[in-house]
Length: 109
Image (tube, rainbow, N blue to C red; front, side):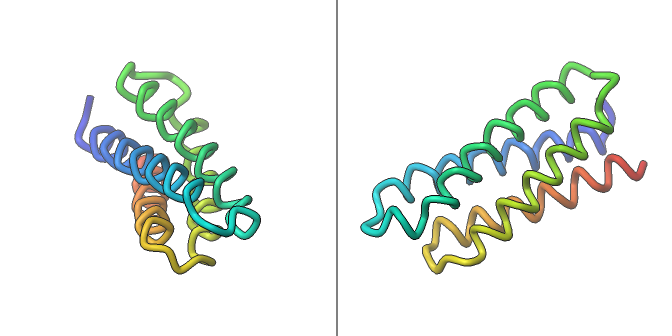
């Protein structure tokens, strides 16, 4: 696995963890209705990032398509989490932005 692949895998795993933390923490918040979309997209983003990391580690022939999907999921999740003031949402949005960049860079290589 080359360096850019490893950077992308690391960013995906970081994002997976941040999304999972955000998802669980959001479920514990008082106003679940306000966080409904955040809960949904953070769960989806976590799943996609986990899949992307796993497939990149295996050396898939579909890296470009998987990274495009992952970047899109991260973009959507970052936009949603940025709407909220909770620390877990802010941290999730930042991790999503880093993962988005890593996936875009890998596709550009």
